[in-house]
Length: 257
Ligand SMILES: NC(=O)c1ccc[n+]([C@@H]2O[C@H](COP(=O)([O-])OP(=O)(O)OC[C@H]3O[C@@H](n4cnc5c(N)ncnc54)[C@H](O)[C@@H]3O)[C@@H](O)[C@H]2O)c1
Image 1 (cartoon, rainbow, N blue to C red):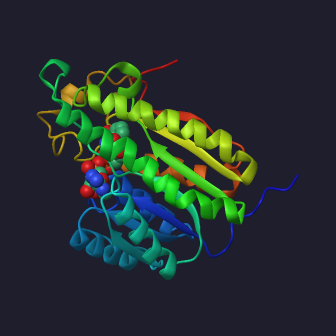
Image 2 (image 1 turned 180 degrees about the horizontal axis):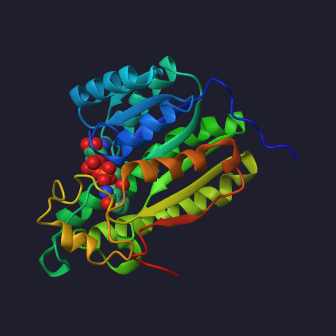
């Protein structure tokens, strides 16, 4: 059976792509270089506009941006409607908008719990729910959501219970989407990274902070944004159609098995 080729004109929506050193920006750049038009969604209009401009200049690809809080269903609907009007059909969605929280469980509050769950778990639900019907209609779609090694290990160096719970929710949601939408040509997978060199863990991982993160990693170094982006490119590509419902560890050996 032949693989279904991706359409020549296709769009990936990348949430959380405004952060200059973030994974979302790296994913947007990599896919823009691989023939995708890119729609970026992030919180603040100014950062979204400058991010879209910089990506377009760097890649020559068609890039559009729209600001939205991913946990706000109406804002996401408006952002996606404006991106859909400007760009080719949405073939892929990569959910990278997210926050971490270092509060230990016994010091945590319900407000902190709800904030993390709302942005990470509900935000992922809202964007998937908005984008998936179009994919089903066109019989082709690729969804990549992000968990974390912290979901499997009971929190990490920086991110504790609410973060771990939100990422487990994302894994469960993604498996359900994968099962229900596979017959419609839509795949849904999770990448679970550990310690990628970005600013989400309380700002830059300086030389001083490095041992705290690298000490636990068998490979002896942080992961990099291009390494994550390369895996995303595989998952959203025409040869990504047989993998669905998977959680792929990208963790330098932090958790094996
Ligand atoms: N960096 C790591 O080591 C690591 C490890 C495991 C998982 N992850 C996951 O990867 C994803 C990206 O992380 P990153 O390291 O690039 O972090 P980052 O902080 O650089 O990027 C996160 C982006 O999400 C955006 N964002 C936050 N709340 C939002 C909201 N409500 N609506 C829209 N956008 C919002 C931020 O503005 C930012 O641009 C997150 O889901 C994170 O949990 C990262």
